[in-house]
Length: 452
Ligand code: UDX
Image (cartoon, protein in one colour):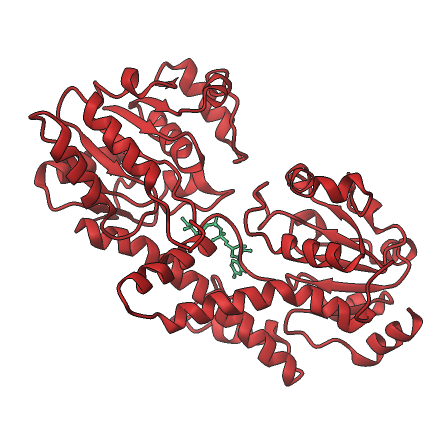
């Protein structure tokens, strides 16, 4: 099929590469000329394992081309995917102006009836607004608008696209259903995983899925705080409840809060959608509030252990990306910790295998002033540190040499924001340990405070 994908960001690029890999002819459009020039050479603007190999092989196979001109790329497309950004506006609303602008441009440039697919996450009713723009302005051509939300996890997006749990197609139009089924059938051969529903239900399904996952995490983070009150290890409770198939083991890991480009933005957008309807979503309000508290937990824990005044204290951080496998630092818990530490006058020595450059750009002033140092090895940032905080659970941090770490650090305090370590093993190595919902061995911590 002739496909045009508009927007070469995370979602657009993964979509384009995977459809090309299945033998379709795909043109990817982006208004950013530099990005297009790099893509034409097979260089990806996003970090996603495996994407450059697929980019290069599909460019070489002439199934994938790039263009910065929608006017040149769109006219012959049978299917056009809109995968532009829907960032949070200052009031939390999802800003759909880029989608609407693309719809307007498409109405001028499509030369034959096309199926226009809204891939970006957007409030309920957006696909209908796109249809209205196309109906009003496309002279005599009948375009059909479909909602087809993505469910891609960063770091595993190619796998998610190639082997999806489900494909949601929002349209009541028979012709669109047939074409979309044909397009996606190779991804779900032998499995009945394509679901048709209304456009509005498809848009809602995307929000509901993310809201539910975020709720699981916030619930578990709240349980961790509760466990702390009663000196119970939340990790034991996690295993205990996860064994119940109705609950399941996924997404019930307590930690230092969820981040990334989807959960925080989508929850805020849903709360805004509720407000515009004059209603409330108390559960989601609580999910968001708990996540904020959770992101502040690491800093509060440092203060409890080392004292309120952290001036002159050196804190080492392992992991800056919002999760392992990505260089994405959007809404990452590390940023809340870094900002609190900078405000209080502490010094930071941080390491991340791939997200350090993004953090350096974000806090360029602190880097220039020497308050934030980004190391190129995880042990190196421990030198003379008063505490180590594990924020992102990269695999390379999983089994560190605690004895070596003990010799490098000035004070032996380990805050485990992802419950990666065995508290007893860490304490045997001479550290005071604190995990999320894993009560510290209190005598050790108070000894530490006196030592400081
Ligand atoms: C998410 C959804 O999973 C995906 O379906 C959607 O399309 C986009 O948003 P992503 O943002 O890439 O994907 O990350 P995900 O792996 O879902 O993790 C989100 C955040 O939750 C991370 O910060 C992670 O550390 C945190 N998390 C996840 C927990 O704190 N505990 C858990 O048990 C699981």
